[in-house]
Length: 375
Image (cartoon, helix red, strand yellow):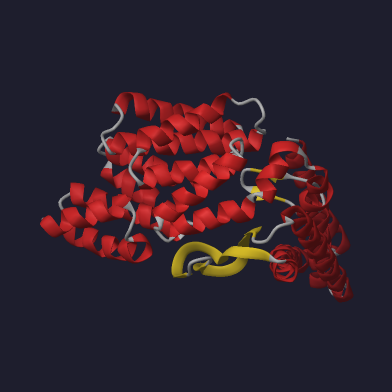
């Protein structure tokens, strides 16, 4: 709540300051402010990307632009997505080598210096109304990045530099174990489930309490279609008292997702599973979980309930904002199954073909493809 108030207060000050400073040409000032915001947001991602290269972190995802997906490229360790409106961009970074905290803090420091330099350069353009607005907005955005924030959908540069060095206990263990967990997730994403389970068995011996290790078990169990086992595992996390609000948001959202998959597969009663999912999502939203991230699961719920139009719509939204090849493949399969339910197997085959290229090993992809081949 405090962070939201600060964000809106800074935004109001930037707008008011721009109008006051460029009164006769305030429209140019506001246009400059919009561009300054875009420039500084891009600088945040560019700084993190450059720092990742310098300090031995892995860039796992690059999303260029906003809106619907136009083109994507998927490699074993990285996914690049080009969206319809090529403004802004986001990257995802993970630990690749030991010493993750030190490397991540250094990355944050580098990104802050980089963003500060970009904001400073914009002040060289204050000879025009456009430049004044650009400088104010870029500086405001930079200052907001210095506020330590870690939420389900956003982590600020200030958190990396001012909060991360103080981290102790299980959260620190999660961070330092990330390279080994990442190896297991890499195996999962390429469909090598035996390797993923082997790495999990090694990790759980050393770190049975880590959420990321439990998460590796959940995704591999789902990939084996052992949904009840996965559901039991993730429900067990909700009673832990050592989880942050952010952790709980993701745990509850994951519980909802696994419950719906268990219902779809026929392993769990629909009335119980869907009600569980709705309840968990409600709690996750209250804890700060971004609602758009739930679209994929909500689409499967709609499909189970027979609302194929809603299932296609929600799965389409989810597919267009997917962050992994497996995630996009799963959404495409939901859309394909909705078309199949409506008797249009031709459209379903087109979607399944793309899903097969992305993650042909996925049980939902393989099962749907097999059903279409039989039909």
